[in-house]
Structures are given as structure tokens and as C-alpha cells.
Image (cartoon, rainbow, N blue to C red; front, side, top):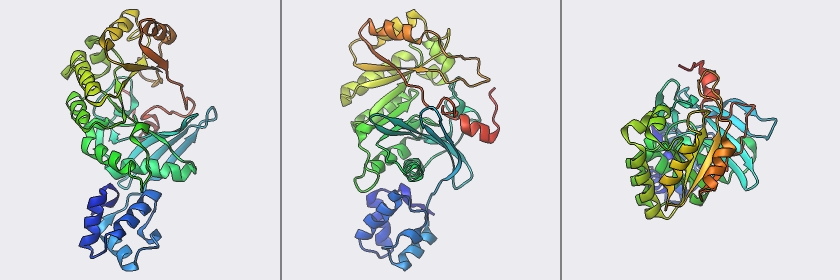
Length: 342
């Protein structure tokens, strides 16, 4: 069956033409899809015959809320969505002064194997379609009753490992007839797939690229992030320099602070050296504990921040949201599936 929500506008017009329908039907269907229609019967301005044809020929993805947790501390909402095939993904709805933000997943599980992340437990099950990524935005708005103005692609999975679907998602979510969230309100996080970073740069999108760095040296980063063994820090920063040169967009570097592992003064100094001559923002993240993990939150976050700032690097400490509801990636799915840390 055709995954209709993943179709581009041109593909949707072609589908309508194949059904013997006029071009304007594509816009009507597109708008219904992006409003969160749960069935083709809800599309009341379509002919009954077209509704029936769509039901016969097309898959309409409608995720179900398997579990919902609301933080008593800050109102953050954690959703565990059950997909049409029985798999689960998570997304997190967060409230900020600048607007509501959703953190979306792009894969069921993850292949990258980062040592401190619960998403990778159980490995990669499958990649999400563009429509399934989009569903998390549409149905979080519908379920919460609140408009979402910002998206961060930092949930389960590696976005650039699902490159084609992610690029299609960005096209769809940016459409003025749909959710209409501008590129400058979208942040895409990668663990450092350098070939895909180079490819992304050629599109010159105005989104914010966030690189999950977590260590400035190969020994530490390879220990925390196996992907580094095939790439290396120097090659990663070369891609980052190329990305900035090509797009003019400043990169954000995510840095989860791990006690006694990546929080030393010499590592702050090395990070400054890597960033010399290239505008960048370092986002220091107080580590979310995964109970069975040997890695613990750093006690030197503020000292590390001050050392970076004293050498001219912009560094902020991420506000911790949803600490009482397993808001970090993969934790709710892990509980639902009974997965255990190695």
C-alpha cells in the first residue's frame, strides 16, 4: 500500500491523477493529513468514491498513545507511541519561553551504540517513514491541544542514518499548507556521520545542525561513541568546517557531561582548539542517568563551562526538563519492552 503521508506534493498530485481526480484534490488530501485525520472518512470535502479508493490503496498512519507521562516539575510531556506494526517510538513535548518544542524520533531503536544512551538498547529495529516522523508532531499537537513551533530531531535513532526519509520529513513539515514549521525552527542532531553531513551541506538548509560530540579526543569519544572509531575527531571537525563554510550556519555541539570521563580541563582546552576560527555553540548537557550504566553525571559542569567561556567559546548548560518522567531518549520504550542495559 502507498504510505500517503510520506508523499511529496507532486507525488500526491500524481496519485490523484492516477485515480482520475483533479489536481486540487491533492491539496485537500494534504491538508487533511496534516491536520491529523484518523481515517479517510473524516475527509468530508472529498467524494465518497475517492474516500473509498484511498482506503483501499493507501496506508494512513495513526500512532496510538501507549503511555503518556506529564512532569509535575515543568509540564514536559513524554509520549510513547505505538505504531501500526506494533513497534514503539518516543517523543517529548517541552515548553519554553520562545514556544513549544517537540523532540522527535526517526528510527525504532538505534544502531549507533552510544554508551550512555538508552535508545540503542536492543539495536536498530527499523527506520521510520517521513510520515511517521511527521505523525509525532501532528498528533502531539492534537493530543496536547497546543501549537508546536520548534522541532529537535534528537529522539531515538540517528537522523542521518535515515537520510532520505528525514529529508522528505523536512520538506513536508516546512510546507505552508501543512504544519508549516520553518527551517530556522528545526534542529537536527547527528552523532557524526561525516559523509552525510557533507551531503546535507549541499542542500544549504537553514536548520541548525547539532553534532553530538561528547568528547574532543579520539580515545574518549571512541569509548563513548563507537561511530568515532571509523571517522575520528579531526575528520568530524573538517566536515563541520565545510558545513559552516557552505551554509553559513553556526553549528551547535552537544556535550553530555560524564563524571571523570570527558569533564577535565585539558579536554575543555582541546575543544577550544578544535573550534578556533569557526563559530560554534557548545551545549553542555547534565547527563541523564541510566540506572545500570557505569556513567554518572559530572560534578564539574559549571567549571567546564567557565573554562570554555574564558577562552572565547559560547557555552550554555541545557535546562533539564522532565527529570521525573524518564524524559531522556529511549527510557520509556526500554521499560515498555523490558530491555535491560548490558
